[in-house]
Length: 186
Image 1 (cartoon, rainbow, N blue to C red):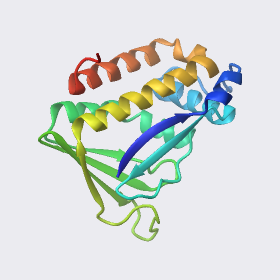
Image 2 (tube, rainbow, N blue to C red):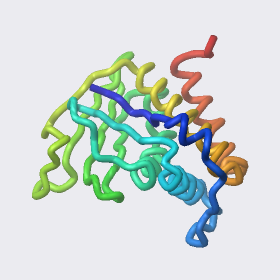
Image 3 (cartoon, rainbow, N blue to C red):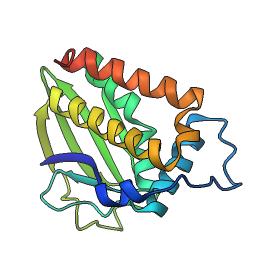
Image 4 (cartoon, rainbow, N blue to C red):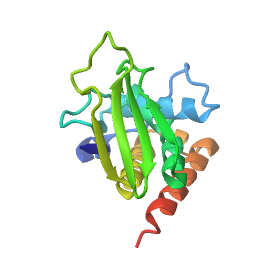
């Protein structure tokens, strides 16, 4: 199974007010902008991050730290898919999930392998050596939809972050990679 999405809670999004970014964020780097936006999304409860990879069981991810960690790495995933041939490791270590997602393009498919980062701590949602092979366009499409949903939530919850130059450049870069892989949308 392969499902990476941001499920918007439309009722909560409609009622959401722009939040205030905490002082711990300098908002200089794209990473700090994504982290601040994801924290505000988590606090406002406007969306839920969902990952189901290499199993039928959803991963225990949150919309703040885990979504931020994944979003920071999507450009690398899309570059690998677009160029093909080499591996890309999505590291979900920093935020406590302690899992590694390894993607490798093979023809018009992407092989996805999920593994534990620490042998001594087995994760119930990761079957050792579990793999999934999914169409390249599906991976790119889901990442594109994830970023679009993220931007839609940010428009309501943190428009000040969405307007920053690094965030705008990142969104354009993601869109460009997605279009290169799946083609222009009709």
